Length: 349
Figure 1 (tube, rainbow, N blue to C red):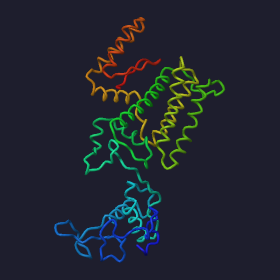
Figure 2 (figure 1 turned 30 degrees about the vertical axis):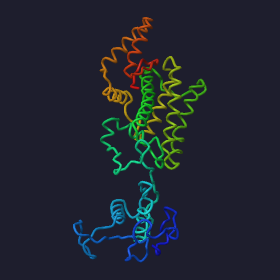
Figure 3 (figure 1 turned 30 degrees about the horizontal axis):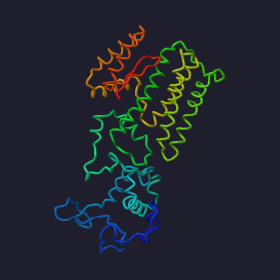
Figure 4 (figure 1 turned 120 degrees about the vertical axis):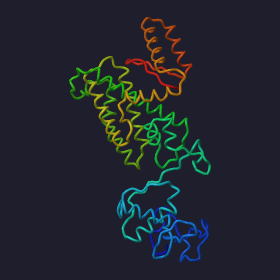
């Protein structure tokens, strides 16, 4: 290791600070205690390959350098891994690769925080881990992606039913706003498609216009800040709040409203293309989510929809007593109703 001047440049450690033998027993065959094996002699019963050095197998570190260089080249852009791999694994990958080629091994290192399960570190030894299949049996795949992107990749992430359910609710809120945008555009099929007349916008519409026309720049700035996906998604929620305010205050689909909705749809589509979320057709996603949630209810979707229709008729007839009874009946089944100008939707609490 003493011959490779840049050793420990990734972790910022120094050889002087490293206590030989503190991590593993020092091998007397090493010229320096920090040296590591590129090829390991096979022990009885172990798999092996024939080599000029006898029967054996590659060391943990060299096999990673060999595979990455074979498929990605001598130098590649991004290398990821858990922060616990910075030393010794990634330091050793750098040392052996750059010593061999004389070229930079990796341009950018991305080390993610640990995954916790209910605030406890996930590990096989503790038995507190889930497979992706098990998670997807309970949650939509887009909910899982949204959950992971809602935290900075270097931050620890706590995997729990409560946090996944909260992520599901957040994603649902965004999709409901996108569905409202689609409904507004469908209702305003007679709009001219002219650009937004900024001078004629009210305060809420002007805020939406400013948020929409600036979100690409704000999104790019967040992603340029060490892939800050959490901040990028916060900008989307900021936009959604403006969308909901404008559409709740709007009686019809004017040219300006149609143009604003068209802008919103286009800008969110750009973000969706980068993050891989918000890319489903809104009504289809919400229906898929509703069906998945309904699978955990003791009331059929058809019955829920029938009661919602009955409640709408009761409200139209000003029979508010019956309307409240139906709302309470559904609430007792953990079904929450949301009334809007576009009608009533439901979700599971």
